[in-house]
Image 1 (spheres, rainbow, N blue to C red):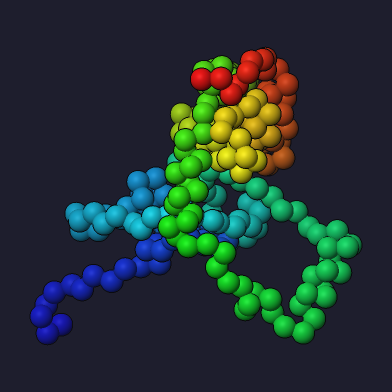
Image 2 (tube, rainbow, N blue to C red; image 1 turned 180 degrees about the vertical axis):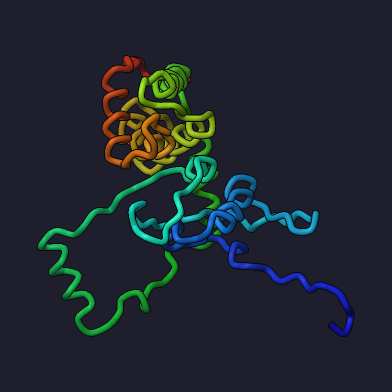
Length: 231
């Protein structure tokens, strides 16, 4: 107040890993605030754009849509999440292991870093170099086009989703020690990467329905056969 000027202070999005816990409890305006930083990796305030540090990515948890006090995520935002995964509930053995792990202390307090940001960026650069055969590109395009031709789907997968699937396949191949993508990589990841991007004509669907439709599409799209390691 003494200088009659605003002072810039970085908010919680200026980080490497942003955890949005129960994201659908946030208001639509708050959710919309993540659109720019998730896609362009930047924040614009009062006409000034500030880049976010690398690496940057968002992890979000979500309550069931039927829960009171929640706001459904708009399609523009769900399309920016690379994958949607469901961990499910633990079985009996896992439940017992949880009880034993938390019996005396909280193991979360003992977590430590397993790599530096520089090491993570180096791994990312390595994954980006993974080879994608032209037939794999065609396979990806055929799968995405098939999502746009389903009768009960009013909005299929966007080009952003196609790119996301390709990048995930390259990362998976790199993790498995290969420098090229195979159709099995695509089939393994397509439901998790594409299902949440589908918009159905009868309103918002459950993730299980979308995954089932993706599995049906994968069965109907011809799988290419080739030596996919050949440049």
